[in-house]
Amino acid sequence: MGWSCEFDAVLWEWESSPEGTAWVFLTVPEDETEEIRLRAGPPRGFGSVRVEVTVGGSTWATSVFPDKVRGFVLPVKKAVRRAESLEPGDSARVTLELV
Image (cartoon, rainbow, N blue to C red; front, side):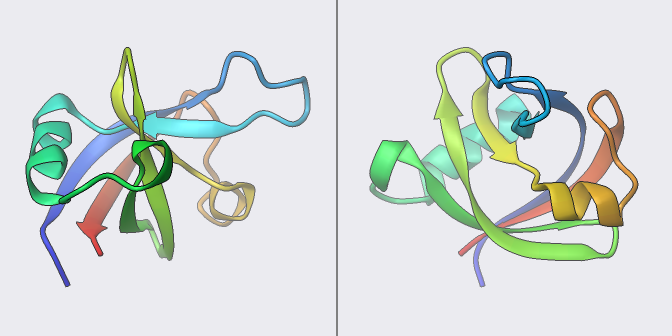
């Protein structure tokens, strides 16, 4: 496919999520954020970039989204968190590939 990277990141909840419906993300490190910006080409809706992600034994297609404070953030859906026994505050090893 395209460029890829590996990193460790801590899962966190989006602050404005109503209780029980929280979106959970992890932050892409600054060095990888810069590489994504250089390699991704023109941004899509909301500045998102399509990626394939692997955490543990789970692989899925999603997008990373720009955040004014954090750089790029990656949503981690509930099914993946459940399959990998991850909660906000846990650290995960992430493989991210541009598609």
